Image (cartoon, rainbow, N blue to C red; front, top):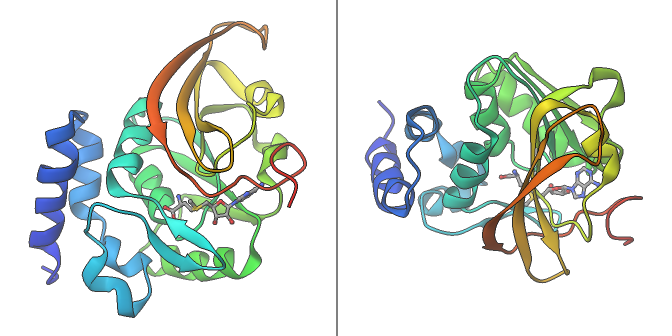
Length: 217
Ligand code: SAM
Protein backbone atom coordinates (compact mmCIF):
# COMPACT_ATOMS: atom_id res chain seq x y z
CA UNK A 1 0.00 0.00 0.00
CA UNK A 2 1.61 3.31 -1.00
CA UNK A 3 1.63 6.31 1.32
CA UNK A 4 -0.69 8.29 -0.94
CA UNK A 5 -3.51 5.73 -0.93
CA UNK A 6 -5.61 7.57 1.66
CA UNK A 7 -5.29 10.84 -0.26
CA UNK A 8 -6.34 9.06 -3.43
CA UNK A 9 -9.47 7.57 -1.85
CA UNK A 10 -10.32 10.99 -0.40
CA UNK A 11 -9.76 12.65 -3.80
CA UNK A 12 -12.25 10.30 -5.45
CA UNK A 13 -14.81 10.79 -2.68
CA UNK A 14 -14.62 14.53 -2.24
CA UNK A 15 -13.81 15.72 -5.78
CA UNK A 16 -15.30 13.12 -8.07
CA UNK A 17 -18.09 11.02 -6.53
CA UNK A 18 -19.47 14.11 -4.78
CA UNK A 19 -19.72 15.94 -8.15
CA UNK A 20 -21.85 13.23 -9.68
CA UNK A 21 -19.48 10.76 -11.35
CA UNK A 22 -21.02 7.31 -10.87
CA UNK A 23 -19.30 4.89 -13.30
CA UNK A 24 -17.80 2.34 -10.87
CA UNK A 25 -14.98 1.44 -13.28
CA UNK A 26 -13.88 5.08 -13.53
CA UNK A 27 -14.02 5.52 -9.75
CA UNK A 28 -12.04 2.33 -9.15
CA UNK A 29 -9.37 3.21 -11.72
CA UNK A 30 -8.84 6.59 -10.12
CA UNK A 31 -8.70 5.04 -6.65
CA UNK A 32 -6.00 2.69 -7.92
CA UNK A 33 -3.69 4.66 -10.24
CA UNK A 34 -0.79 6.33 -8.36
CA UNK A 35 -1.36 9.87 -9.67
CA UNK A 36 1.62 11.20 -7.67
CA UNK A 37 3.99 9.30 -10.01
CA UNK A 38 2.72 11.34 -12.97
CA UNK A 39 4.09 14.64 -11.59
CA UNK A 40 7.61 15.80 -10.73
CA UNK A 41 8.94 14.72 -7.35
CA UNK A 42 8.61 18.23 -5.92
CA UNK A 43 4.86 18.25 -6.69
CA UNK A 44 3.97 14.77 -5.42
CA UNK A 45 2.35 16.10 -2.27
CA UNK A 46 0.02 18.21 -4.45
CA UNK A 47 -0.92 15.42 -6.85
CA UNK A 48 -4.29 14.74 -5.22
CA UNK A 49 -5.42 18.37 -5.00
CA UNK A 50 -8.49 19.60 -6.89
CA UNK A 51 -6.47 21.30 -9.65
CA UNK A 52 -4.26 20.84 -12.69
CA UNK A 53 -0.47 20.94 -12.12
CA UNK A 54 2.48 21.85 -14.34
CA UNK A 55 4.32 18.95 -16.04
CA UNK A 56 6.97 21.01 -17.90
CA UNK A 57 7.09 22.40 -21.45
CA UNK A 58 4.25 24.79 -20.51
CA UNK A 59 1.81 21.85 -20.25
CA UNK A 60 -0.34 20.49 -17.43
CA UNK A 61 -1.73 17.30 -15.93
CA UNK A 62 -5.50 17.80 -15.92
CA UNK A 63 -7.61 18.30 -12.79
CA UNK A 64 -8.77 14.87 -11.47
CA UNK A 65 -12.46 15.76 -11.82
CA UNK A 66 -12.05 16.70 -15.49
CA UNK A 67 -10.27 13.39 -16.16
CA UNK A 68 -13.19 11.56 -14.50
CA UNK A 69 -15.85 13.58 -16.35
CA UNK A 70 -14.28 13.08 -19.78
CA UNK A 71 -13.59 9.40 -19.16
CA UNK A 72 -17.12 8.69 -17.94
CA UNK A 73 -18.47 10.42 -21.05
CA UNK A 74 -16.57 7.92 -23.23
CA UNK A 75 -18.70 5.09 -21.75
CA UNK A 76 -15.90 2.52 -21.83
CA UNK A 77 -16.73 -1.13 -21.15
CA UNK A 78 -13.31 -2.72 -21.62
CA UNK A 79 -13.61 -3.73 -25.29
CA UNK A 80 -12.80 -0.43 -26.98
CA UNK A 81 -10.00 0.87 -29.11
CA UNK A 82 -9.44 4.36 -27.74
CA UNK A 83 -7.51 7.28 -29.21
CA UNK A 84 -6.13 10.05 -27.00
CA UNK A 85 -4.77 13.33 -28.39
CA UNK A 86 -2.41 14.96 -25.88
CA UNK A 87 -0.59 12.27 -23.86
CA UNK A 88 1.04 14.80 -21.53
CA UNK A 89 1.88 13.20 -18.18
CA UNK A 90 0.16 9.95 -19.16
CA UNK A 91 -2.27 10.02 -16.24
CA UNK A 92 -5.37 10.14 -18.47
CA UNK A 93 -3.69 7.51 -20.67
CA UNK A 94 -3.36 5.19 -17.67
CA UNK A 95 -7.04 5.68 -16.80
CA UNK A 96 -7.95 4.76 -20.39
CA UNK A 97 -5.59 1.77 -20.31
CA UNK A 98 -7.44 0.42 -17.27
CA UNK A 99 -10.85 0.84 -18.91
CA UNK A 100 -10.40 0.12 -22.65
CA UNK A 101 -8.82 -2.76 -24.53
CA UNK A 102 -6.20 -0.76 -26.41
CA UNK A 103 -5.11 2.85 -26.20
CA UNK A 104 -3.41 4.88 -28.93
CA UNK A 105 -2.07 8.18 -27.68
CA UNK A 106 -0.44 11.05 -29.61
CA UNK A 107 1.75 13.77 -28.10
CA UNK A 108 3.36 16.59 -30.07
CA UNK A 109 6.21 17.22 -27.58
CA UNK A 110 8.77 14.41 -27.90
CA UNK A 111 10.32 14.86 -24.44
CA UNK A 112 6.93 14.42 -22.74
CA UNK A 113 6.11 11.38 -24.86
CA UNK A 114 9.36 9.59 -24.03
CA UNK A 115 9.14 10.33 -20.31
CA UNK A 116 5.56 9.07 -20.25
CA UNK A 117 6.42 5.93 -22.27
CA UNK A 118 8.99 4.96 -19.63
CA UNK A 119 6.56 5.60 -16.78
CA UNK A 120 3.72 3.61 -18.36
CA UNK A 121 6.11 0.72 -19.07
CA UNK A 122 7.24 0.74 -15.44
CA UNK A 123 3.57 0.49 -14.40
CA UNK A 124 2.96 -2.40 -16.86
CA UNK A 125 0.58 -0.56 -19.18
CA UNK A 126 1.46 -2.62 -22.23
CA UNK A 127 -1.85 -1.99 -24.03
CA UNK A 128 -0.79 1.60 -24.81
CA UNK A 129 0.90 2.79 -28.02
CA UNK A 130 2.33 6.32 -27.98
CA UNK A 131 3.38 8.27 -31.01
CA UNK A 132 4.94 11.73 -31.38
CA UNK A 133 3.16 13.99 -33.86
CA UNK A 134 0.28 16.28 -34.61
CA UNK A 135 -2.77 14.55 -33.16
CA UNK A 136 -5.19 16.78 -35.08
CA UNK A 137 -4.69 14.25 -37.93
CA UNK A 138 -5.72 11.38 -35.66
CA UNK A 139 -4.12 7.97 -36.25
CA UNK A 140 -5.65 6.77 -39.49
CA UNK A 141 -3.83 3.38 -39.72
CA UNK A 142 -5.31 2.32 -36.39
CA UNK A 143 -8.81 3.70 -36.98
CA UNK A 144 -11.72 3.32 -36.51
CA UNK A 145 -11.85 4.09 -32.79
CA UNK A 146 -14.75 3.50 -30.42
CA UNK A 147 -13.66 6.38 -28.25
CA UNK A 148 -11.60 9.51 -28.96
CA UNK A 149 -10.55 11.99 -26.29
CA UNK A 150 -8.75 15.28 -26.91
CA UNK A 151 -7.08 16.69 -23.80
CA UNK A 152 -6.19 20.11 -25.22
CA UNK A 153 -8.49 22.96 -26.21
CA UNK A 154 -9.50 23.02 -29.90
CA UNK A 155 -10.82 26.04 -31.85
CA UNK A 156 -13.23 23.73 -33.73
CA UNK A 157 -14.16 20.09 -33.95
CA UNK A 158 -11.48 18.44 -36.15
CA UNK A 159 -13.48 16.63 -38.86
CA UNK A 160 -10.67 14.08 -39.31
CA UNK A 161 -11.30 12.81 -35.78
CA UNK A 162 -14.99 12.32 -36.54
CA UNK A 163 -14.04 10.39 -39.68
CA UNK A 164 -11.90 8.04 -37.58
CA UNK A 165 -14.76 7.28 -35.18
CA UNK A 166 -16.66 4.00 -35.49
CA UNK A 167 -20.46 4.00 -35.75
CA UNK A 168 -21.71 4.58 -32.21
CA UNK A 169 -18.27 5.88 -31.19
CA UNK A 170 -17.82 8.86 -28.86
CA UNK A 171 -15.53 11.88 -29.29
CA UNK A 172 -15.02 14.03 -26.18
CA UNK A 173 -13.11 17.30 -26.47
CA UNK A 174 -12.89 20.90 -25.25
CA UNK A 175 -13.85 23.46 -27.91
CA UNK A 176 -13.62 27.23 -27.54
CA UNK A 177 -11.11 30.06 -27.49
CA UNK A 178 -7.57 30.01 -26.07
CA UNK A 179 -8.71 30.75 -22.53
CA UNK A 180 -11.98 28.91 -21.96
CA UNK A 181 -13.79 26.09 -23.66
CA UNK A 182 -16.89 23.94 -23.50
CA UNK A 183 -16.54 20.20 -23.09
CA UNK A 184 -18.42 18.51 -25.89
CA UNK A 185 -19.38 14.90 -26.52
CA UNK A 186 -20.15 13.87 -30.10
CA UNK A 187 -21.62 10.46 -30.84
CA UNK A 188 -21.39 9.20 -34.41
CA UNK A 189 -24.79 7.81 -35.35
CA UNK A 190 -24.20 6.32 -38.81
CA UNK A 191 -21.75 5.91 -41.68
CA UNK A 192 -22.42 9.55 -42.55
CA UNK A 193 -19.76 11.62 -40.77
CA UNK A 194 -22.24 14.51 -40.43
CA UNK A 195 -24.77 12.36 -38.60
CA UNK A 196 -23.69 13.06 -35.01
CA UNK A 197 -25.37 13.75 -31.69
CA UNK A 198 -23.77 16.69 -29.87
CA UNK A 199 -23.94 17.17 -26.09
CA UNK A 200 -22.59 19.96 -23.90
CA UNK A 201 -20.83 18.72 -20.75
CA UNK A 202 -19.98 22.13 -19.23
CA UNK A 203 -17.20 24.69 -19.12
CA UNK A 204 -13.49 23.97 -18.78
CA UNK A 205 -10.05 25.44 -19.35
CA UNK A 206 -7.33 23.54 -21.20
CA UNK A 207 -3.96 24.37 -22.75
CA UNK A 208 -4.22 24.77 -26.52
CA UNK A 209 -4.42 22.03 -29.10
CA UNK A 210 -1.59 23.11 -31.40
CA UNK A 211 -1.56 21.68 -34.88
CA UNK A 212 -2.66 21.92 -38.49
CA UNK A 213 -6.33 21.42 -37.50
CA UNK A 214 -5.97 23.16 -34.13
CA UNK A 215 -4.39 26.45 -33.11
CA UNK A 216 -1.35 27.66 -35.06
CA UNK A 217 1.50 28.41 -32.66
N1 SAM B 1 -4.20 14.16 -20.33
C1 SAM B 1 -2.98 14.86 -20.06
C2 SAM B 1 -2.58 14.74 -18.63
O1 SAM B 1 -3.46 14.58 -17.76
O2 SAM B 1 -1.38 14.81 -18.34
C3 SAM B 1 -3.21 16.30 -20.42
C4 SAM B 1 -2.01 16.95 -20.92
S1 SAM B 1 -2.10 18.64 -21.36
C5 SAM B 1 -3.55 19.33 -20.72
C6 SAM B 1 -2.39 18.60 -23.11
C7 SAM B 1 -1.31 17.92 -23.92
O3 SAM B 1 -1.70 18.01 -25.30
C8 SAM B 1 0.06 18.56 -23.84
O4 SAM B 1 1.00 17.59 -23.44
C9 SAM B 1 0.34 19.08 -25.25
O5 SAM B 1 1.68 19.03 -25.63
C10 SAM B 1 -0.52 18.14 -26.07
N2 SAM B 1 -0.91 18.62 -27.39
C11 SAM B 1 -1.31 19.86 -27.77
N3 SAM B 1 -1.58 19.89 -29.09
C12 SAM B 1 -1.36 18.63 -29.56
C13 SAM B 1 -1.48 18.00 -30.84
N4 SAM B 1 -1.86 18.66 -31.93
N5 SAM B 1 -1.16 16.69 -30.93
C14 SAM B 1 -0.75 15.99 -29.87
N6 SAM B 1 -0.61 16.52 -28.63
C15 SAM B 1 -0.92 17.81 -28.48
